[in-house]
Amino acid sequence: MVRQAKAQRILTHDQIWVALDRLAARAGLSPSGLAKRAGLDPTTFNRSKRITSDGRERWPSTESIAKALTATGASIDTFARLIDDEAGDARSVPLLGFAQAGASGAFDEAGRPSGKGWTEVALPIAEDRQTFALEIAGDALAPTYRDGDIILVSPGTPIRKGDRVVVKTKAGEVTVATLKRRTAKAVELQPLDASQAERTMAVSDVGWIARIVWARQ
Image (cartoon, rainbow, N blue to C red):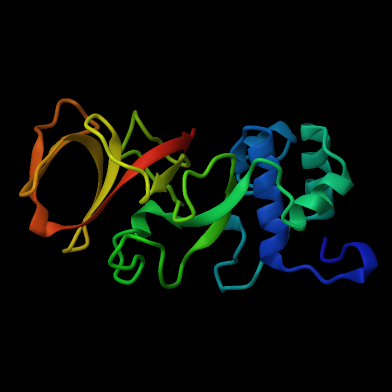
């Protein structure tokens, strides 16, 4: 298991996994895409594999890291720099599963990450320091977003008509849709499935709304 680097510095479980996420992002891949390119089981680097069912930390093997480095043409020195937060044009942002986004306490009143359950993922762009990521599970948002896709959400980026947005109601419902129109009293949304009817929400029912600025698919 890889738990040490130069000068016998003890590394953490999160540091190693974030470095793998950064390695994947540098190559334009998802964690599962990196695993496949490395000739490993596609789920080897998935977030669900990083903690065991009984809550213990699961570390990547040195063999799997070596294969990932070979597949991306990166050196062990590059990997060490990624551990040390020198990720080039990639930046770590908070990550939460989309299914958990509606949970109480996952966000503060302004739509910023809060509470437990958040991890990190390295992504090549970040529009503002409040940016966070949501990982899609299942096919409820298909074909626009599929299982395993990651969407980057920016609360600080201005929203315009036609933008894809994430909306969280004060009741806790989380919706992904295209913004049709927003007035002082209402928000009009077009579901990603164009066959579904448009939806109108009263502004008083909306907790927050934020623009999707990027997706890794």
